[in-house]
Image (cartoon, rainbow, N blue to C red; front, side, top):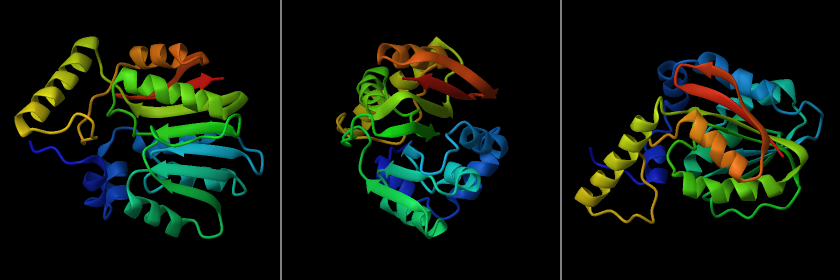
Length: 217
């Protein structure tokens, strides 16, 4: 397979993206609503959405908390344009950048969320992000992560080995992001979150290979 640069991959798939996600991922009909229900319900709650895409989880969240203030970060501008068009009048701060590079104000957010975005990155890369994310949450703030996870440590290792082989074959720069699934196991993900300083890290619910994980500052 030919690897595609991450933002270009999603730019080429904006049309039909929502239908694809709902139809092809086990549990999607339930996990977007479930994830949204874990986020704070008080009016004016500040929520950070990492890899917000077209805002499938925000469709559910704004139905529960229409006065929430959401900062959404995504690499793909057409995805953000689609999201913005969905929610006229909502309190949105949309940022087209990598969440690894984004500056986040300390102790600013009541909660953070990420859905089906972080399964493309190494534990080492995530550790720095999670430390930054924890610092951006208020005391007691929660990170709700709903994502695809590897079913075993052997599979996790295989995914990363396959990606490395493809990048070598195609002469691609390891400093750039390419679209290829490299999920950690849920247990490994929890270890990274704990190493970043989160407490009370646990799996809330499972849909096949997708889990919702909570991590509390």
